[in-house]
Image (cartoon, rainbow, N blue to C red; front, top):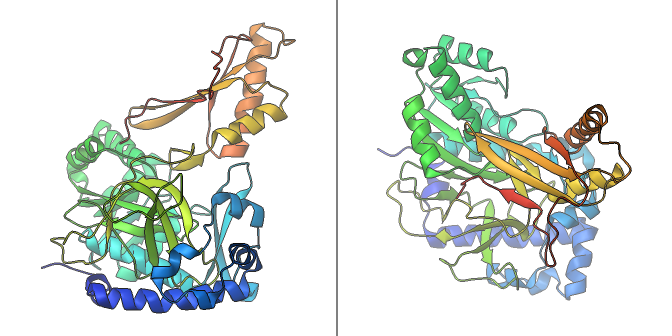
Length: 432
């Protein structure tokens, strides 16, 4: 017997879904045109008016939005409701240290939490479960999203947030947590700590909902074995709402998109042309009923494939594959978005030449970030001077990125130069 949080929405016929999407889409285009001057200007530049949009078949006429638009419009330029109606922001870092700030009305929060509730129920959860939410809380969407979803389902929710591993394990044992929600790399860290403490037989977990960073099928199997659970993937992005935009069911052949709220397209990242279903391309989302921060045709930069193959779980929601890579240079490290341009900004601000290399790896299932930077030509090479300069850069990068990078100052001219595009990033993780 399959369980659904919202049976009607999750299993409706294609015709019914399309009619609902069309109705919401037309209202949303008018809402954005009337209330968001920034996007109205983009529409005018493209020569498009709301009356030109008759249905979703015309979505290709609308301009795209990108992270660059969010940076330019920061903080209030894409807000579509009076501030008095907004009750929350969530945030993620942007490409140059300017943050992406997303606004929510109470209705927006309710929808987001319902999407997360769908994910919990799809993973077999119900109100008898004890859900430990070990994603970060605060501005990061992971904690608040799964916390709200857990409440909607009626689970006992343990809002541990991330870190403090001893306390995490104590609560897990004492309160008999049955669900764990966190990044896959932190789940692996917890699994190893549980093993070291000899507490494996006292852990009652049966499912985990893991997201915010790329992870492999091998890592899934390892987590399932070590924790005695079934591990489920979840996808989301702050700009669209947060986790719960899509989620895995027990079939685990892709993530069902909550397409009654978020309309997906796959485009050619070079030309912007919409590709037929089943093609590999860049994922684009349109918020169909978000009130405060409704993005139309937002380019996620994630490369994936959509499929409407019937699913054994009975859900008719379209599925997306795990992201197969990105069409830009953004890295996701320990669940945090990191752009090489952010690192370059810090180096330039501290008087270094832009000769650097970023090395990303995964050691003991935790992402590592190392930055090799050429010393300034006039800098003394004695150990104390170098170590002091490295510490300053570590601190500055932590302020910019929100995570710690290991900085290594190397000899001037020692990083290989390239006549073409510089190889700034070496990512040794096997993520896809």
